[in-house]
Structure formats: C-alpha cells, structure tokens
Image (tube, rainbow, N blue to C red; front, side):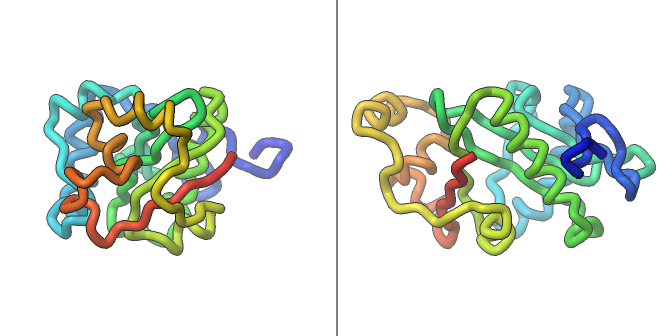
Length: 180
C-alpha cells in the first residue's frame, strides 16, 4: 500500500489481485471477459481488430493465479474529458472489489493524462454513483467543443454526445460523469 492507503499499481493487493496495462496477447482474454455482457446486451461487442487498435487504452485485472479476471479502458475524447469503457469482470469476481480496483486504476490514468472529467454510459448506476459519478444531462461541453466532437467516428464519442444515431445502442443506459 502507498502512504495514502491505496494500493500502488503494478503490485498485487492483499487478495493477490494485480491491475496492469493490457498487452496485445490479452485480446482473447478481453473477448472472453466481455462475452457474457455482450450476450446480455450490456456491452457492445468489439472486433479483435478494434481491440488490438485500442489495447494501449486497456487495463487488465489478474487474479492470484495470473489469469485475467477483469478489463477496462480509458478513451480520451478531448483535453479535459475521457470515457471509461468496456469495464467487465469475470462473474465469479463481482462484489470482490476488483471493479473498484479497475476503476481506481483508470481514474489514475486519467489524472496522469491531465483529464479532469470522466464519462461513462452504464447500466451499473449504483456502482458508479458510489465512486462519485453523477447522472448528466444532454450537453456537458461548450458548443465549440461539441462541433469538433460531433465529427468523430468513435461510437463512444457519439454516445457521450447522445447522438440520435446511437440511441438504439444506449437504451436503458445512464450517462454519468465524474469530476476528478
């Protein structure tokens, strides 16, 4: 543990959990971890090529035996805003603080990148609310920034902007934001 009582990253915690940057070789594990959530339409499926192309955004949680038990990514949208995306845990590890460790690591990454706000689109409102995320309205960026972001081809940016073309993918989800 660090002097602030939080676990240092790249070290195993008291339960043997390690949160680390993802490797290209983790893509099959990410697919395995997100599959149950894709099947239940909680997460959108991702092609391997998309995961390989964004692997540097991901963190992996390893269990005590070194097997990946969780994943999550941080995608930066603008100079002050990023999205937590593709946060998924092996069902056997839910309610064992692995999600907390993953989110803590992604928020640490955001701070390291100088990002002041983190967005998420989620069904897990209670989990994110416990971590300081608040439900948001339609616009949380200036019109100038909106005009730039609306040109992005990234589906996560479209979800953040609440664009009509992604509404079928987001029905039932809650848009949340945390100020770091």
